[in-house]
Length: 78
Image (cartoon, rainbow, N blue to C red):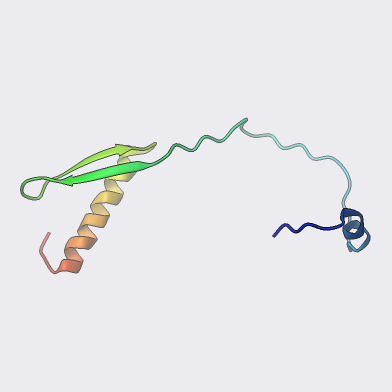
């Protein structure tokens, strides 16, 4: 946790001080798309899914797992 205080005192009281340079290579930015999904029950056992995600297949799998758990917890047969 970052705390406000006296930087010079912090260095004086530090057991170790590491000096030098470090170069980190990597991507120039990190873009995280907002994730949204809307599931609408249809007739019978159908579910219509609208999703704005980076991984549609993962969303489909996770939705199926969630629905299966819901069915199992309700005592109904899938």
